[in-house]
Image (cartoon, rainbow, N blue to C red; front, top):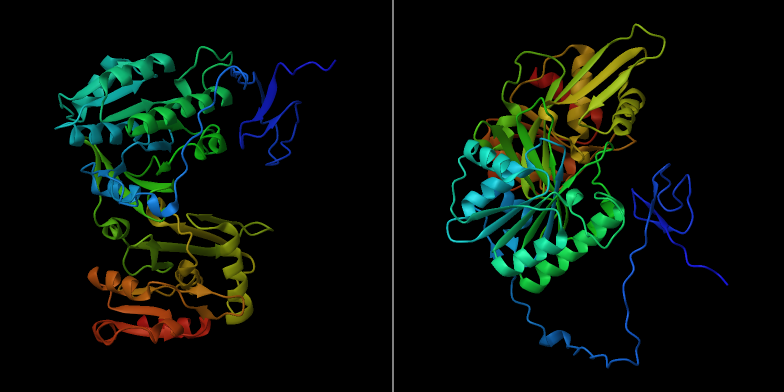
Length: 458
């Protein structure tokens, strides 16, 4: 007779389950990620022992389609990423590196919402006194914020049902445990089942719950795929320790767009909103220096200007070195190849360094033209006009392809004092007459034409 497996193996990267151990996960291909854990057992009644109630089905036209009620946090940048506020009964996962500001922003939200709402902050890592010390530093003094230092999920659920708060914060999900499970806190099984319990609690009581999740050494949430399909919204806090600003980005949002970002600056009094990120990114920009060009990228509905810096210098080694920070490495190599083949600028034997100032990551192809101009400027040691902006996608044939939201990018550039914009030729036709009169627009078809415009701006 076949015996039941006492344990299962779960991939820590993708959540794949198997009855036997693999060195390499069959689903995601990661090595040494299979963890042994006890399967979750549930007692199921026999179908004949009790009658099963059949749920009532609804026609699509009978379902109420009114807009979900949202709770405004009082932090505009946070509400922007959420899609307009917190949806009642939603489960939100907030993740980021240690010390990035996850607990800080949640305490500040408690200060905003604590005026007329009861809030419950559940801490599994810090004592109530430690949270009080941080709250004093952040000047969080609302009387409606209640603290509970607890890791047992059953106790937390009973407390929430008894207190009935308007908002619950779980900090963090890796410290929560269900006693019925034999696995330790932070394991795939514990994280998954604890999140499931909180999900049912949020939906049944209509209480929004924030879950704080830690990241592993690869920068992903511990058990990311296990959590992402359970929660309604996944938020990531990004930022470099050497910089004071933080970027809040949405990776999943059932109630809004995932293209919006929120920008914050870390100060002694906590995280402060940055309403004009472009001005922050361009502050301290050097003048009369080669190898720098300003790009305009779209983050959702918001245009953001960022400085692209390139440094091209003779290599002292047999194999030239190429590095980039904030831009895709393979795409930079593609742009360099197009510059050599189509424009006649040769980087053979040259070290190439590319940096997006401020730690911002440019994932949009519209930044290609700015990157190319910065590299050629450094190669030729030619200073670009500091009031000139460029954006456009570069094709393998050396053509400059059209991008979206062109007029919105130009208006943002004009607002910050840029009076000349180098744009794709195919975007020029759709611009309004007012924009063409206010800003010097230079439409270009190829890389060569863009560099001719560079020489005119020097």
